[in-house]
Image (cartoon, rainbow, N blue to C red):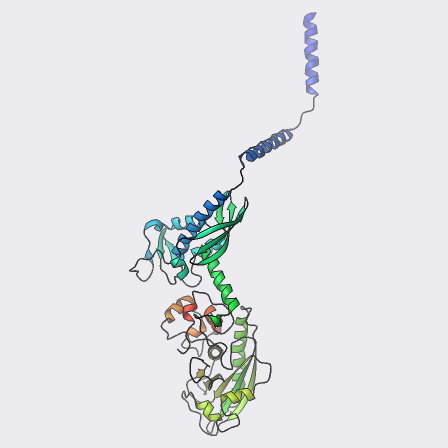
Length: 448
């Protein structure tokens, strides 16, 4: 009897256990997960400690020191030997392996843009430092004085929190505001002191004006064609003499080609917000009572007007220019064989007042026409540009801007779609109020 009672009691207990509500596996795992999150938060809270001044300063000093090393390598020529060979040479020492450089760069900056710019420096031309089969090679086409002379810096921490710090860094006599940020627990600079220096140079140049710089010289703001910006007038003068004259068909062909040249210049100028360029053309006709020479004679055009009411080209330009134009130049077209030329106004020459009215002379014949490139080439020079071929630094410029139209000696029949206006020429003609420090050595060419 006792055995029967015990068996009944066990059966009742089993039936009661089967009726108890049981959560599914996901409920259990969610509960475990929530508990785990709570414990992780608790452990993080226990491990967390706020950053202090000593940590920030120490990190800043290490990063700025690394930054100086990096800018010296890429912009300061620090890998070069005294007897440097032309072309790329292999580096030895600390940065023999290119990965040593990239590791240092990645441990110093947080911005991929800054990293990419540094690794491909300078901004124009071939990279100063490259990798070949994992080895570091260098060939400096441009060394910046600031980066080359940069040594130790002094810094102070202006402000900081757990994620970001603002620094004041003084290097080579210049002070910059810099920031660093914490990325995955490590402090990194958001920029390079070198790039901060370049930006400071740019803003100074834009605010003070390049005209006040002792390093820059251009033909801008002189003569009737001050610069290729604003509202510009081109006077096309079709010049007949005692032996030659223009037909209506040939004149129309020239007018259309000049218009094509102007359209190309306007299109190129749109990449530069400072240009705001609009060009008008006007056709005039003049009959010379004698013979127009077929060779270059600088004073001829002024002599031609000498016994007229115009007196010289300046008077002719002034009398034929309506109000409302910022700049004006005159292009003379004569129907005979000869070599084209232009006479820009250059204040470096003592007679620049005589040639204030900037002018060009174009020669035509049945066998010698002109493409739009001829007019583009001359107009760029009249408005401040420089011929870039035949100079001591031509090869250096060509390495930077091979497609600049002013580098082309044979400009008469160039396909304009294959050429451009480089940042150097854009500065010289007024499309940009700033020229990169890398390009400054190519700008001071007045009187050449």
